Length: 319
Image 1 (cartoon, rainbow, N blue to C red):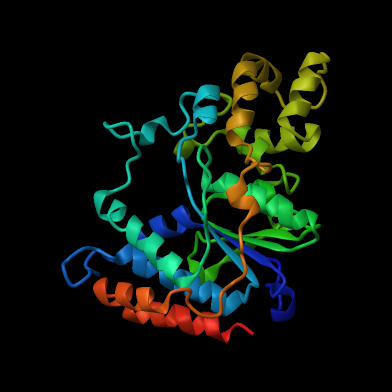
Image 2 (cartoon, one colour):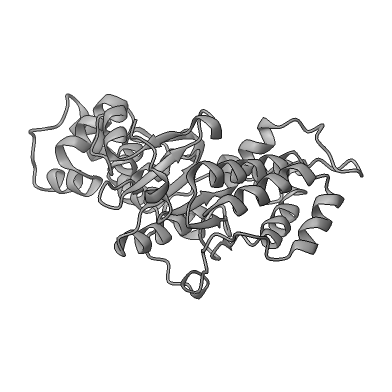
């Protein structure tokens, strides 16, 4: 594991939160018995605020953006691969967000806004794409980026040159796994930034990504290591190459050409969204709430006094 950045280094870093990933984790990790005075569950709100407070306290970022899903199942991805997240579609055509969580999402937005933590979402794109675009922009200017997520798809953005690293939440916010290029390479046996190609080959049922039948983790890693990318594999097939393909994989890949061509659009995180809402972002981490009165009212109404105070204390402590 890479060592955490020291205080001076992290002060210049941009922290990007995969906010849906975090509030889903909070919802399922904090009991629904945590409620507002009127009985409304606020477990996701409280859990998310505490996560952000700990991240700010432990990492001291100079900049922070709460990236949001403006579209959890973008049309361009569904057009490329109709199975994309199809198993998550509810009867009404929306996603299967539990009702007790859906009721908390407006509260989350209101608390973040009152606290002065900028939210960023772009119509037609997922939070991953917002993260990808902001990462590319900041890294190109020589800045370091910490991406906080429980989604392994974002491993494709790691880059030791930024550095860009993922703070992976699988073990919880208190036990973040720092995943850079070296860590991704060590864990999956692939080039550090090739996770998207690797996932395309082996599949990901959680996203409705079938993968290439008969190609598992080891074969996927061997193919990506040998050919570098899905595009490299397809070029080798077009050229009639026979070397470098594990036993039986060449035939399977030939049969899956259409899937491979479509899946690249689905799996690849967009890094070049052209949207005025992203160009105009003020991502400076606030040292005090933007609207103290509104934040105090929200804290009282929704039984958020303790987590809001912890967030305010964490923000004030960043030097």
